Length: 117
Figure 1: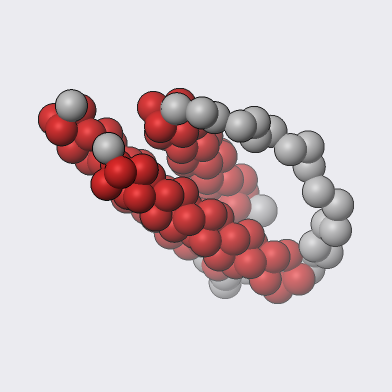
Figure 2: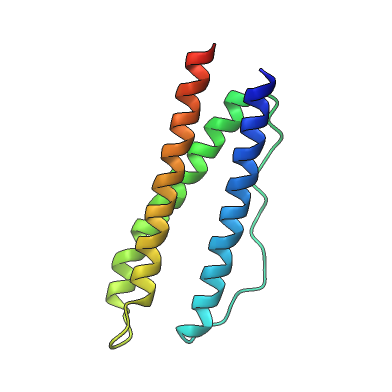
C-alpha cells in the first residue's frame, strides 16, 4: 500500500507541475495575441481527500474537464485567428494531446492499483 501512496504522490506532483506549465504557456499566448494576462485568481475548488481512490477520481475529473475546455477552445481559435497565424489552434491541440495522455496514465495507474488489491 505504501507503493501506491508514493505512486499517487508522484502523480499528483506531476499533475501540479504540468498544470503550472500549461498556465505559463497560456500566459505567454495572451500578450502574443494582443491581450493582457488576468492577474486575479479563481475560487479554490479543492478539498482534502483522505482516500487514494477519491484523489484518483478527482485527478480524472480535473483532466476530463481540461480536455473539454481545450476542445472548446479549438473552434474559437479558428474563428478568431489572426491572418497567417495558427498559434492558438496549435496550442489547443497540443494541450488536448497532453491532457489525453495524462488521463491515460491515470487510468493505467488505476488499473494497476485494482490488480494489486
